[in-house]
Structure formats: structure tokens, C-alpha cells
Image (cartoon, rainbow, N blue to C red):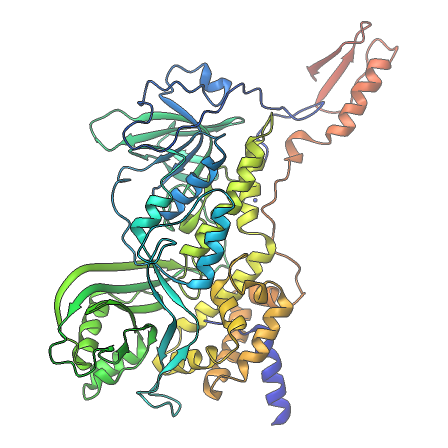
Amino acid sequence: MRILVIITCTFTSLFCCFSHAFLATSPPLLVGPISSTSTSSTRYYPFCSKNFPAIGTSSLKSSSNAADNNNNIDDSCDVLILGGGPAGCAIASLLGSNGKLDVVVANKDFDKDWVPNYGVWKDEWQTVLDEYKSFGIELDGGEFGRSVDREWDVTDCYFGGSFDIPTEKRMRLDRPYCRVDRFALKKSLTKNFRVVEANHMSNAIGINVYSPAGTLIHDEDGTTIQLQPKDADSSPITMRTKIVIDTTGHETKLVMKDNIEPYTQPGFQIAYGASVVVDETESTNLSKIGPYEKDAMTLFDYRTDHFDGNESETIKANKAPTFMYAMPLGGNRVFFEETSLVARPAVSFQECKDRCFKRLKHHGIVVTKIEEEEFCYIPMGGALPARDQRILGLGGAATMVHPSTGYHICRCLMGASSVAKVIQEELALEQPNIDRAVASSYDALWSPGNIRQRNFATFGGEFLMKQNVVGLRGFFDGFFKLPLELWGGFLAGWPGLAYNENHESWEKRIWFGLNFIVKLPLPVAADMFLSIVSYSLTENFSLIQSVTPLLGDPPSYKYKRNMDSIGDVAAKEEAVGMIRQSNADVAEMPTEVAITAEKTKDVEIVEST
């Protein structure tokens, strides 16, 4: 028995966890790579929704000679961002921050408000604030400043009802939590770029192949893309740009995914949320709204006692768990959200809404007014972007959502800063390599080390998906008993965020596992062990790769020249030099290309016959 326990703990600690750059498109070269001959200059336009240069009358020079010679180009820029959410506005603001790049955001509905209530850990948000300040961008505004409209010093969880945990028992986490002021955040990120109220028209049908034909074309110096204006009766806008960044979300139509089997399908986080006003006239304790403290943010309430006495509803809630997430907003206002953490297939929105109000009624919370409703749909996990493509994905389009938790906003904003640095550096070169810029940007997001860390979290999402409510209570009760630096690092899951350094190597993930396993109830630990074995045998080896030195690193996104098309340039350059020095009438290479040296010593390249 002792041996079995040791083996179980060893394997579990090894594996447990919570919860190709687009290849060079130049034609075959003899003496070296073809370099860009672009003579474009970049101009800077501060964001102004009404005063950016009119489409069709842009004073900008085209971003390439190809576009300069094309009278059909309506407008041009250095970087075109598709999508106007946080990811799009963040990368646009960052890229334009040095005043050297002309950046355009294309979005039909740019003026619409952002919808989600973004919840963040205060220490993680501070790392984002510091990073953006280094670009000269202040994320400010909001009642609490820092683009924050609400802050709680503590965070509460309820996992009672299983494993001898009393139903009413509260677990308090001494880690501050914030609600991002989405209006202030958008205002802070609406700088340094122009806006075109139009969306792209294309669908990727293969790597760098798009439909309808002609709506999106790449060449060595950049991309020509057609955009459909907000007015559907208007003619498409033809935009010339060096780089296209797609921030339109997980279900992007342009970013191809590396979904070659075996790979893990995405799960889905579904939530119904409502900002409400509650009746407190009968309340005997105004420091609470129902069981929820007003000075605390409630992260998880996985209790199901509101279904006691209803067997069918209890069975349903046990098999498809949801939890309450509650943000007291001051006075008698609160944001309640009933959430299915991750499921495949997704739990219905109606089920989440019904459970939300059933729970509130059980707790004696009377809603007098619903100010806002939010329907949250977050794909989690799934395939990473395919290599060798020219379109650069960011945010959901680059599968940046945490695959176990659904956290995204801090990861996205930090990832955008890494991408901005890469692109600013590449486009500052006299002869930038667009393929290298995109490949290096993907590598900045998904380095082999970051992929291994994500694979660790992806298994966590898979394990959480198969748990009933009892398993989830036991799991999270053990998880939050870990030291903050361990559970906080897992929830971060992105370089630069608070505590992430504690999960960035396989050794540290092993340490996390060793500490975690002893916190779990035995049935949950046993299920995790079996899940590790099953997942590793039936899915892929990504989990083993993430927690051991075995199997090496995942394939890299780093830029590699296409040796199949350009060959060994150094060898061919050597041949050219020797041919120039040759006294022979004809000097040839035994390849598909013949090099003829005439008496003038000029080198002529001719195709072999």
C-alpha cells in the first residue's frame, strides 16, 4: 500500500496541475535574399474618430512600391489592426506610442462600448500599469484611478457541502481584487492611431490563402486587403499595409490554427451576469448582501443548498456545476454572475440565468432593478495559431485565454506589449523583413517555454471539465490552501504577471504539484492521477513535455528562412566570386541554374536548358 501511495504521489506530482513563422516568400535566389525596396515613409496621426485622413484622399505614401504603382489603393498604413476591443486598441496604442508608425484600427462598431466586467487581481493589474507606463501610456481614470472603478481588499470563496466542509464556511483570500473600469480603459487605449469604420471581408481557406479571391493578398513588402465599410452600400476600401494584426477573437476567420490531430478541443466558459439594485429595507445587516460581504469580492460560491428539496435540479447542478461570482459595487448595487467555469458542450445561458436568480432568492436577495445584463462566452484552450502564416493573431485570435480559468485581459495586455516591441524594432530597420516580424511576434507570445506552461494549464482545464460539483469543491479548497505564490502563479500563466515566475519551468511546476497533491481530498487526488494517465496515453504527450525535461521543447515560431527555395546563399555567393575570377569562357554550376562568366567578368544568371 505504501508503495502504491508513493507511486501515485510521484506520478501526480509530475503531472498534476490546476484546473511553422511564415516562410520566406522570395523567389529562389543565387547570391542572396531579395530585400525590400520600399521607399515608404511613415507618418503619425493621433487618434481622432472624426479627423483622420479621409479614405481615398490619404496623403500617406504607400507602404510598398507595389502599392505606390497601384492606383486602386485607397489608403495605406504601417500596421492594420482588425478589431476594436481591448486587444486591438492596446496593440494599436502601443505601436503608435513612439510616433514613428502609422497605425490604423479597422472596426465597423468602434464607437460601441466594451461590454464585459473585467475582474483582475490588483497585483497583476499593477504589472500591466507599469508595463504600459514604460511606453508612455497611462492607464488612468475610474473611481479608484488606474482604470479601476472598484477595489476589494479581500476575496471570498465558498466550497462547503462536501468533504466535511460546512455549507456556511467561508474561505477568505488575503489578495486584493479589482474591477476594471472598461470605459476608462478604452479611453486610455484610444490614442496613437487612426480608425476606419470597416471590417475585413476575407476568410482563410489555407495558410496565406483567402477567399473571396483578391480580397487579401500578401507580397514581400506587405499586404493588400479589402475592407467593407459600415455602410453596406459603399464600395470596399482597399488598404495597403505592412502588417495585419487580427484581434477579432477566438473564432477568427483569418488566423489559421494548428489543429492537426491529436490536439485538445476548446472548452467553453458560459456566464449570465447582471448588474442589479437590491432591496435592503428588510436587511438586518447592511454590511452584507445576502451571505456576501460588501467589502469583499466573492470569487467562487460553489454551494448548491439552494436546490435542497428538488432532486432533479440537485442532480443537474451536480453534473453540470456553476458558481456565483459577486462584485459588490457600493450601497445596494452589485454585479452577480452565475458561471460555468469550463464545459464541452457549453452549459446554456438560460440555465445559468435560472440558477442565478434561484440562488439569490434562496439567500433572500430581492432584485428591484436590473441595470445591465451580460452574456459571457469564452472559448478556452484549443489549438494555437499555425506557423508560417502572415496574419498575426493577438488576444483570443492567438488563443491567449487561460485554458483553465478564462482569465484573459491581463494576459492579453502584457502579450500586446511584447508584440509591439518586436514590430517597432523590425519596422525601424531600413529594409524590414515582414515575415520575420510576424514570426518573431508569434514567438514573443508563444515561446516554447510559454507553450509548455500553457500545456500544463490545458490539462487543468480538461480535468476541471470532467468534475462534478463535489470534485470542484474539493479541488479548489485544496488549491487555495497553497501558498499565494503557487496558486497565484498558476492563475497568472503569462510572463511578466505577478507570481508567474513560480510556474515558468518544469521544475517549478513539479514543485507546485508536490505541494498541491497533499492538499487534495483523496478521491480528487485519485481521479487526478487516473486522468493524468488517461490524458497522456490518449490525447498527446504535451502534459509530459510540460512537467519533465523529456521530449524537448515544442516547435518554435522563430523565423527561419525557406532553405528549400533559397538554398545555401553563402555557397552560391562563393561560386559567383570564383566565377568572376575565372579565365574560362564558361563557368557553370551543376544545378537548375547556370552562371556564365563573360570576359568582362560580369556575372549573368541564366536558366539551364
